[in-house]
Each structure stands twice: as C-alpha cells, then as structure tokens.
View 1 (cartoon, rainbow, N blue to C red):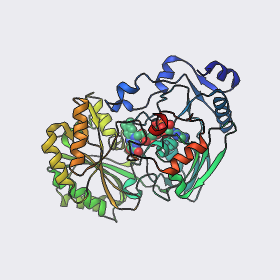
View 2 (cartoon, rainbow, N blue to C red):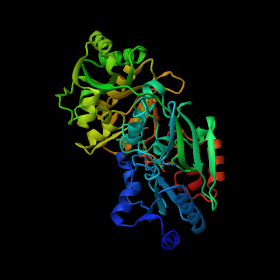
View 3 (tube, helix red, strand yellow):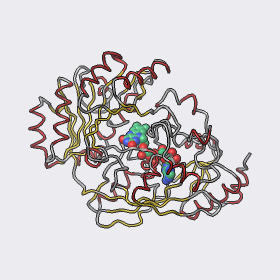
View 4 (cartoon, rainbow, N blue to C red):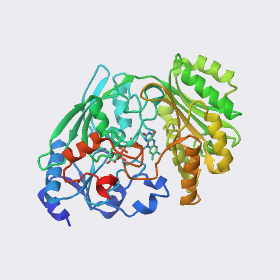
Length: 446
Ligand code: FAD
C-alpha cells in the first residue's frame, strides 16, 4: 500500500486537492454516458489530486510517485467518454489544466502546453488570424492534450479529418514516468504512438499544431421533410469545394427535439442539419439548400453566437446525446461508421430492426486520406445491457462499423482488438513500472 501522506510531505509546494467532494469530482469523466460502464466505474476514485503549476513540479511529482510506487492518472478537462481519465487503482490524479502556456505562435503554427482548454486556445489563435483545424464539441472545457490522448476530432474534421491526420499535430514533447523523468521530442509517424492511448504511455507536455485561417462561421439549423433530402443535401455540401464549411451533421426530428435551448419548434417527423458556413458563402449555400427543399429552421451569425453563448457547436458530435440526457436519463449512444455507398439503406435496415430505439445522428467528415467518412453517434434508448449489445451486433451485421464506446480497455475501443507494437514498446520504455493510468491495457493489467 502506498503512502499519500509521505507523498504530500515530500512535495510541500505542490497544490494538493484533498477534500472528498473534489477528489470524487476530479476522478470522474463522462463514463456515465454508458450504462455498461457506470456500475464498473462509479466508485473508483483517486487518493489525492495534484495540480502542478509547471514542468519542474510535474517532474518532481513523477519522481516521488515512482519512488513510492504510486499510480498516476493524467486529467485534462475530464470530458472523455469511456472512463479514460478515471483512476482505476487510486493514487494521484494529475490535473494538467494549469499547464497552459503558449510557447510561441508564428506563421499559422502554435506550440502550446497540453493543459490549455481548446476554447481558450482558439480565442488566442484568433487574435493572430488563425483557428484550430478541428476541435471537439466540448472545446470550452476540454484540453488540447486530452483531445490528442483521448479524442478523435470534431468540428473542422469535415475539412481536415481527425486530429491525428498527418500534418495537423507536427511535434509533441512527452514526459516519461521514471525516477529521473526524460522528455522525448517526437514528430512524424511516431506521434500516432501517443494518440488515443489514454495517457498510458507518457504524459504529453506540449503539442505543436498547424492552424488554419480563421473565418466568421454562421450557424444554421436546416429543416427537411425527408431523410433522403437531408442526406443528399449534406453530401452535396460536403462535395461543394467552393462552399467553406466547418461542420455538417444530420439528425432525425426526435433526436433534434432535445435541442430544447434552441428557440425553434422541432417537428419529430422531419429531419435537421446543423452546419457552420463561412459568412461570405451564404448565397451559394441558400441556393444549394433550395435545390434540396431545405429551409432555415434557425440561424445566427458569428457575432450573435459569440454574444449569446448559445452555439450549435454544443449540439453536434457527442453533445446530441448530452442534450438528450438532460431530459431523459435512459439515452446512451454508439460510435458508428457507415458504408458511404449505401448509408440510407443501412439506416433503413437499422430502423426496421430497432424501430424507435435508435435515433439518427450522422457526422459528415473526411478521413486522414481526405476520403469521405460518414460517421455517426446514433442515440440509443437503453433498456438492458443485453439489448444494447444486441443493437451493436445488429449494426455490425448490417456492415456498419461500431467502435465500442462501452469499454475502458484500450484494446477494445478504437484500436480494434490489439495495440500496435510501437504503443507497447513505448509503454515499457516510458513507464517501466506501469504506474501511468493502470488498468486500461487489458494485456498488461488483466
Ligand atoms: P480528459 O477526459 O481529461 O482525458 C482524456 C484522456 O486523455 C484520459 O485518458 C487522460 O488520462 C488523457 N490525457 C489528458 N491529458 C493528457 C496529457 N497531457 N498527456 C497524456 N494523457 C492525457 N471527442 C471528440 O473527439 N470529438 C467530439 O466532438 C467530442 N464531443 C464530446 C461531447 C461530449 C458531450 C462529451 C462528454 C465528450 C465528447 N468528446 C468528443 C470526448 C472528449 O470531450 C474529447 O475527446 C476531449 O478532447 C477530451 O479532452 P479532455 O481534456 O477533457 O480529456
């Protein structure tokens, strides 16, 4: 058993959080989206929270934790979905949020500490005329380190693909978990070794990001009478190279009916599209909508969005489930990839087999090779564990890929069964005592 008292005594200058209520809160992420994970993770918590203010405090913390054999779990904004940041074996949760210095920004490239929240990061880059290539719908709370270590992509991925697309993150500084922690400077393909590994193989200190010119994005909620019209509109918009957009997503009217903070009457039998369009592309955008019989249900300009604080960006991606959960605790979701040659047929088959249990939410993006990727976060009405597993199987049988979002094991999620050897090699070299976020790698921890 490790001694937290000794840890505190040896590092008196670190900011410690010791109150039970705060330890409990800072030991959680959004695992409770999954009814399968909730009973497994609800009681897991750290023994203490550390808030290092700079790199040397973080190194000192690691050094003493290695000496005392104390597990460390890194936390950014704590918005991850699968218990990624939940400390399964207790120990220290390392809150990275104070490590948020911009090291430099020049010619559309920024080097920033990993704890900076993306909302703050984007405000900063905008002052220089740039914006992030992609960010999650949780951008206000989530950190850039957390996106790289635990996330996928989001708003902007319609142009640039997921965050791991080559050329978006171009360097990273990684800290090892040893008595004398080393800093490793990585670039190129090696970056992928630290992407979506839940902070198990090193702590990301800094990321160097390539940005894109900032635009004023107008927000539109479009309405369509049929799924076919809404879908063909989204595909046409995706393919319209001359129409600058930052987001395209589609919802059936029942899913959209939970957007209760948007001042508009949603019709459950209709279909809705959230899109962010560059303000100077309004005319061609309206022409394209008219061709597909779309009408504006609600709209706000970039300035209005900034003033109101209400944004459609907090309704797309995983936020559609969060909006629904605010009104009905029985929702969960899946993470799906459709066959882009027959998405409508796949959706119809899902509907036939699940009726009103599965609500449509599609995201239209590009993959890392710039190919069209129709991905989804369908809302699922949860009735039992077995039915949820059956619904996953129904999707798979219909040729829809499901990334399991109801597991905390790294192998069983996006990594599709096994971890690359490069990830395992970095784990044993950077964290030889398996102190970093232990319990998340099935082959090491089970
Ligand atoms: P945390 O939850 O704090 O951490 C995530 C993982 O990364 C943990 O394993 C943690 O240990 C590790 N980690 C954090 N910081 C570091 C570091 N510096 N070094 C090493 N490891 C680290 N995800 C998307 O990709 N796109 C979306 O659009 C999206 N929308 C969401 C909407 C909702 C409502 C919710 C609840 C989640 C959503 N997510 C989405 C998931 C999550 O919000 C994002 O992935 C986010 O970027 C995570 O950042 P964070 O700082 O909150 O990470």
